[in-house]
Image (tube, rainbow, N blue to C red):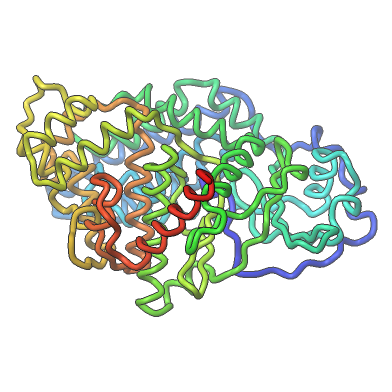
Length: 494
C-alpha cells in the first residue's frame, strides 16, 4: 500500500530545542481508535444492510421511471470512504488496496470512476500526528535523542497516510534521508480488525458480490486471508526494510530503475529510514513530453514484470505516490511494505499461460490455465473463451507495434478481465484460482492504470516476449537493461 507520497523535494531544518520532550510516551498515546470487535464491525454491517436496501429501491425506481442511479452510487461511495477513513485499520487498508480497481469491475463501467475517485482519497485524507508525538515515537523506537540520530530533522511531515508519515532529515555524514514513522496505536487497531475474521470477509463480500446479480466462484475467505497477511506484513517496517534492501541490491547501478538505499541502523519495527529520492511529482510528470512519459511508463512496466521474472517478487502496490520520476527517463521506486513472493513453479505456470496467448494458441492457453488452477477441465468454459479472456484487449502485453495505453483502453481491459457482465463474463464467473493470486489482478490492473495516466507508449509485446520467450530485447531501454545485467553476471562469475 502506498503509505506516503514523496514530493519532488523538501527543505531540512533543525527541530526546535526540546521538541520531542513534551509528548507522553508513544505506547500510552490514545489516538481514539476503537479496538473493540463489535465497535469495529458494527458500522460496516449497518452501512452494508442500509446500502443493500437502498440499492433495491434505486434499482426498482430506475426500471419504473428510467431514473439515473449515479447519484445513489456517488452517495454510497462517499459513505464507504467516510467509514473506512474513520476506521484507521484493516478496512481502510483494504479500501486502499482496491482503490485502483475500485471494486468497479462488478458494476457498470460508467460508475467505476465514481468509486475509484472516492476510494483513492483514502491515501491522502489523513491528518498527520503532532510533531512532538512523531519525535517521541522516533526516539522511543531508536533509543537515542533526536540530535544524536540526525544533524537536521524536519518536524513537519512531507506526507501523511494511513499507517505512518514521512519526515525529511539529514544524517551526520551529510546524506539526505526520508524517515517513515508509524502512528502509535494503528498497529493494534489493525491487528484487532484482523483477529475478527468475519470483518474483512464481510467487506470483501460487499465489494466482490454486492453489485453483481451473478454467482461468482471466488473464495472470499481465502481472499480475506491473503489480504490480511499482506496488511500484517506492512505493519512491520523491519520487513519492509528487508524487502527494499533486496530490491535495492538487485537494481543498484541500473540505468533507469532506482531503489533508495535503506539506512539499516536507523530502522525498527515502526521506523524506516532511507535515502531521500528527489525528482518530479506525479502531476508534474503527467505534463512532461511524450518521449519522457514513454520512458517512465516502460521503466515502471519493466520494474513490475522484470522483478517478477528474475526475483519472483511483485511489489504489490503500483500507485502514483510510490514513484519519483527524473528528467533522464529513470524512476525511483518507493514503498516496499506490500511485496508478494512467488515460488518458481508458480512463475513458470503463469509464464506458460502468457506464452501460449502470445503464440495465439487457444488450446494451449486453456490447458495452461487448467494446470494453474484458474479453471477446471469440467467447467462450462471453452478453450476459445479462456483464450479470449487473456488475449483480447491485451495490447499492453501482446502488441508488437507501439501502443499508447489510455484510461479508455484500461477500462475495456478491466471489463473483460474482471466483470461477470463483460465480454468474457462466462469465463470470469467460473474462475477458481488460488487466493494466493488475489494480488495479481491488483498488480496487473494497477500497473496498467499508472501507465495509462502517463499515456505511455511502447512495443509492449516485444517486452513481454523478452520475459516469457527469452527473446532478445528490441527497445532501447531493453538493450540498456540487458547490458547492465550481463555486466553484473560477468562480474559475479569472474
